[in-house]
Length: 135
Length: 135
DNA sequence: TGGCACACGTTATAGCATAACGCAACAAAC
DNA sequence: GTTTGTTGCGTTATGCTATAACGTGTGCCA
Image (cartoon, rainbow over all chains, first blue to last red; front, side, top):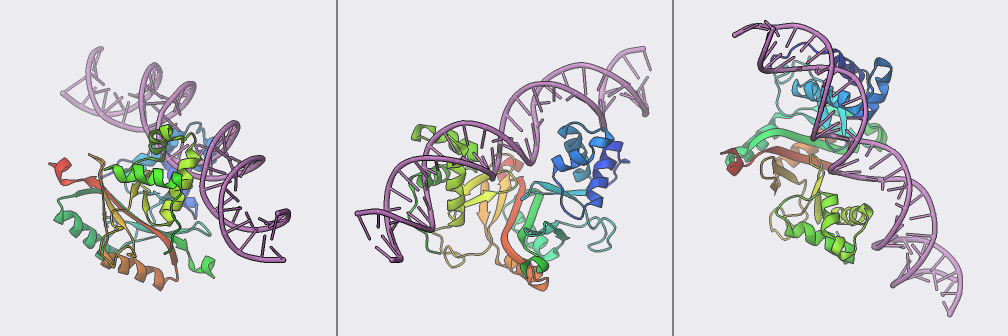
């Protein structure tokens, strides 16, 4: 997975996501970057597209928001070349926790292979209450 | 899971979904029901909300569309009281295949329990190409 | 130096979802 | 039987999410 250096817009968007402790919507990103010259949604979406392709950012389908990949320096799962990403998203505090599960990957893989289904992108998201918010 | 009888609007919406061989967006449902007096998105969304609560309809988060539950009469997984629903969605032909995997449920459950995370709704969606479309 | 690829900026538009109001029907409680 | 609460319904308006279509500039390299 060789990626070119990030462009200015891509860096700015990634920076917003990295600084945030929660998923951020595209329009929120736009607002946070108005001082840096951002004026239109497409500037955000185009950057997000590249960042997502590069695996630096994940999109949370169930809440239409984006997060920086939490594991790009992690040694787990053989570094950044891991399989499917899963998220637990707290509906209370909004926090999203990224995790990986090899067994689940394997099960889904098995299902797909058995049916000659060729996966492109897999989404696994659990919405619920985190420990703090459930108390 | 005791549900009251469906209202007229709910029946109409469920009927559209049942007849369709593909997921349908809320606005498409609206269009298909204009002849039956539907005029506003909320009429659709309110029906969808109830149907989803009742487990008769599933929402596909990754494509913002809805499908009738494929398994409400099935004997698998102890009838309609099964666990999490998963989907394989073909980006070619648009078809969505519903399936269940007990092992995956179990793994996700285990992850959640270990962290005292209380799941409310879990989304599992594989987008890719079905056998026909991959050929 | 022409052609190509790519990022960018702008305007406009499409698509998805909900807020807030009021009305009507029905059932339980008194 | 009237009150009261609940539920569904219809309407208008609005907000949020995402992309189409156009043109510009820059760097690369054949």
